[in-house]
Length: 345
Image 1 (tube, rainbow, N blue to C red):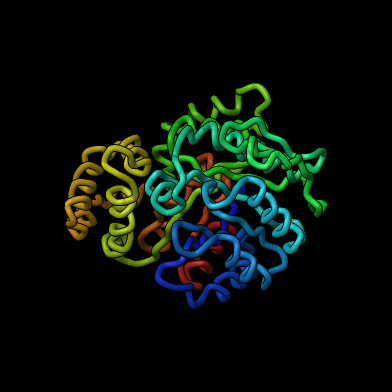
Image 2 (spheres, rainbow, N blue to C red; image 1 turned 90 degrees about the vertical axis):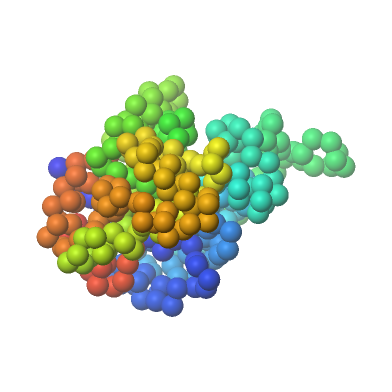
């Protein structure tokens, strides 16, 4: 059986920065965690907290889970990546994702066309910058370099800074089958925002399709699958699950529109389509408490570790047998310590 790694998932901020982030980060490194991750939505950014808190560490990998494509041009993202990699001594991991039309159009004021083609083009430009083999160019159509038209003075450039590593790992967040296949083809790993060891079969074909494509960067053996594993350790399973019901209701019901919600689709493919419709209908009707109440405990248990430590120890076997290579966990210091004991031994 493979050795499972664990990482600390700090996510993005709520109304303000978490007061105990430095304590969690330093404790995770002391406990032997492999990595620390930050995220962004439409509040805090992913890079600044990672640099600030990561400066207190020496060993753990520092990753974004994830940076939104529309927040930065590909070259700006590559500049941030090579800067972070130098500052961390080669510990940076670049996690990327397209987000969704609500955020892309509503927050960044950009269109949301062809997410697969945009991702492929974006990653190609980032890799060109990091390779620093020649001036960076792109035929577009999404990120043409140099910019066509304009003053006519634009010219291809190479980064001034020599990257510490030309092969900074790139991890893609993906939920749909085609996007998962793309991640397996062009990336070094995959973030499934909602991961169920029981229901991984819906993604197996997509991963295998990506690995089989000509020029695929990785194989199943050296491809990272960094699965979010929310954890609440408590004697009462139902009470522990209650903590996640509003979170799942938000993503299934509110993170997207009725006609386009990638998170809804994930749970439908897991076999929860009927429940997902109830959750979505209640949430969009403004009945958030009813939406949370409609989240089945089984759904929570599929994507999270909830209950007594002995139950979680048993539940971990399914995670170890799955394609997940790293479990990304969150929680207080006591939770981090218990997970280190259960996962790392």
